[in-house]
Length: 268
Image 1 (tube, rainbow, N blue to C red):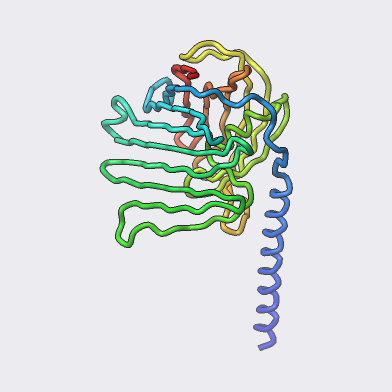
Image 2: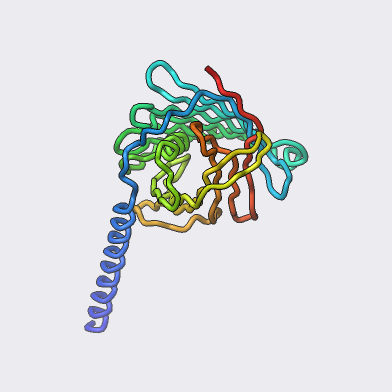
């Protein structure tokens, strides 16, 4: 009995130590988040753009993106993407995305994504406030969609994190750490400005700001976990008054994939 008692106390102490270490780790990375408010860089002009996606020079998908400003201080981005060519014959995929952001503080308001693969349709709706995000994901299964909640202050969606980062000075070697909730999970993004260089894409040649992106998944207990499918990415944005996304090269579990600007047209 004494042996069992000693074992029980040892096990209990070990569990407590693990929980304390997880809590300390969660506090450490949260304290390292970027606290700077949105910068004074000019806001993104309304535009229409086209991007291609693929790997090893092969175009696997394309997307049309529309960014607009509304009269009620809202920035709206809408995107429609799809696989193309022989890739579509192997994997038929279509996606529609819409995000609304408050231009006063660059905080997300809501986003909606519709994914269609081989006849299956999945709709994900996100509703943000200062305390976190509410998610409703409907895949057509019996029982209907069940809402879920993730509480974390000042979460970003895909549009708001891009608008926030482009508003910053983006000086060489500066680092930004932000939390983004793109669809079903939260991620810690660490963005490092690695320098300036000239880059040519299908849309033209640009002076560009080069960024390095690392991601960690944020667990249920706010502990950081490695991203199982994403390793790192290099991002180029134009080094001008627009700071539009030019190219992304990401190292993922299947190799290196890319997204590249094909054309852009600014609207009044």
